Image (cartoon, rainbow, N blue to C red; front, top):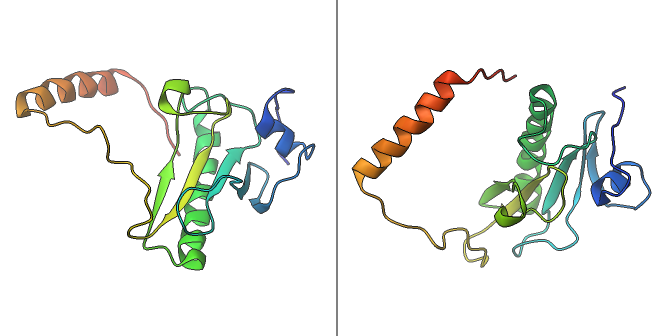
Length: 152
């Protein structure tokens, strides 16, 4: 059994320690998954998946733990799609307040979707020119090549 490292003031860590009840749909030694109390869309099943170790965001979580989280997210998403009758699934993970992260504990939203459910993720998009894309892609590629990544 993995030791849980939790933050005493974190709401999600309180869920992990069972200080606050959740409607749990899945739990193993690495993650806790529970229904969102303010679900998006019209289908039932909007679920949050959190690691049992406290990490603020994707930049802090270690890669081995991230692999375990992603495995659970995939498993749960498949089931939610089937059970809810969803046509599609959004898997959303926000990092930082500006990006919409409300709880400072990394978490993934699994949101079942159907046509016309009213959820909008396509607002404030912009058109770019090929030269802009090439410049940005070059900078990203250079950073990726110069950074050591280990994953799963």
